[in-house]
Image 1: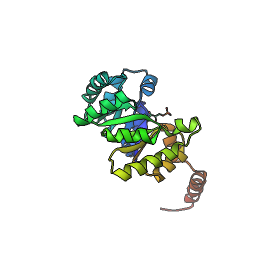
Image 2: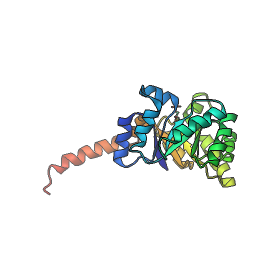
Image 3: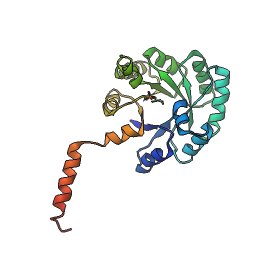
Image 4: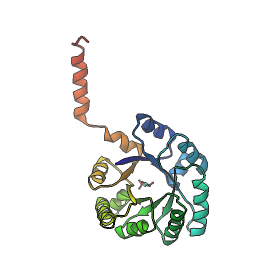
Length: 214
Ligand code: E4P
């Protein structure tokens, strides 16, 4: 499963990149706003060292302007993926980007039917938001299983990029359910390492190692 970070924080991105585990980055307008920086400037800086897919989201809601914005974003670097909301105008724009060979990430996906439409449009990635579904009383993880089954039924190559991941159980479950990629905040990445038995086991090994000679 490819591991993406859901952030525009350069320091966080560098930590995972330097560990050698980073496959790509996702951003959205809220994440970019949090950085307090100019949109295109942040995307450019991320792409200067991240070579995997970097999602940058269009701001418009009509296909014509989405395409114009998307082309500008795609010109920043060859690994920029144009993120487009799952609305009819967005799907129109995805069809156009697909015809031009530009990669897309269709975002704000909350149903299997929406995911099917995105795949038909030729989307490179589909982003089902599992945490936000859980928040309103639906089963976000079940959506991953449904999309996997439908994509496999028809051989769609659109990659399932599990998004809105809030904790390690989400992470494990999307892997078990066959998501191709997952995008997580840095805080969740740190949690993946943690287990009390790892900490206590290491403390004991360190203590006993003092009795050893090399
Ligand atoms: C994914 O592409 C989105 O940026 C993100 O995962 C949304 O997560 P949130 O629901 O925690 O804001």
